[in-house]
View 1 (cartoon, one colour):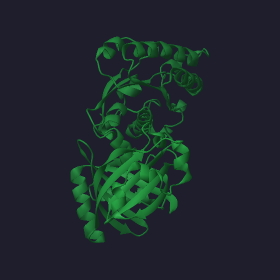
View 2 (view 1 turned 180 degrees about the vertical axis):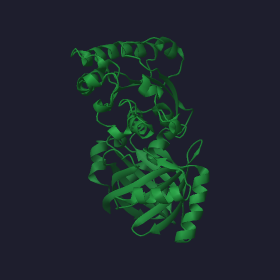
View 3 (view 1 turned 90 degrees about the horizontal axis):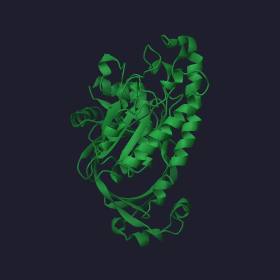
View 4 (view 1 turned 90 degrees about the vertical axis):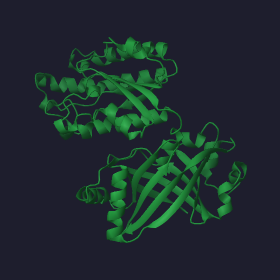
Length: 389
């Protein structure tokens, strides 16, 4: 069976998971309980993963479900994920099949194309305890997923209704259940769930430091959100400092001297945008090249991710409002040279210009609120995932 899977993925706290289970049972009746075991296959160098897909065997309800998924774009800000999905139901014994035998089964042509002759290997898997309810056209799945060193609690809502996020978000708020969108699939979290947390150095200016966040959102800077959304997979050190231009590397050597960095994420350029002589984008890229060379010399094994700075709201700028259009243009033009630099260095690249809606910027027109920093964190989390961190 071939189709499109569309589902909301929302992270829950354990207490919220238990509360929601009671609320849904009271409203919709007893759930259907599924004790699931999941096993994933790919080539040793993860060719299916690099092509945006995965191959899963799932033991549940006395049988085996063979599934091949392919990612369709990036997840939405509301936690909406879209995948192509091909499925076959098999007998219980199929769950333990040898990878070589699975390769000989009838599979979608995209699998063979991605593998390009490489044999399948067993990546391992995880267990999941699922409670299911049907509510109109929605399928609600309340999950407790056991990874190597933790249990993730999550609500998945399979739906075709574009208003489902708003509708169910209101219900959870009424019931006092905290949640936030989960940008990573269970499979993505599984791949990096083992071992100690990966250490990430976040280097930037006030956008990284979390300056001017509303009083009720302090601590919602993007490095903190990145760490929280990773479910313990990432330990992120925030080395953001307000006012830092791209050429200021004071303190970087000391930060890099701490051993064991798995990744360095750099978000700079917002302050340089106030230089309106026309050369700011190129100067930023040149400064970032020097910074990258310092990072590579001190932490050669760390993945490097460069982010081009986000937009501002020119009409809301304070002392620099008169140069607002030029400042915005500088930010827009920084994307191309930073992208080219990242490509030359083999680094990850995240373009942020145009991603922050004006109503998600503070009154100064520069600093994002909590929802705005979530946008940055979501983009950087995917970049680190692509870098294997």
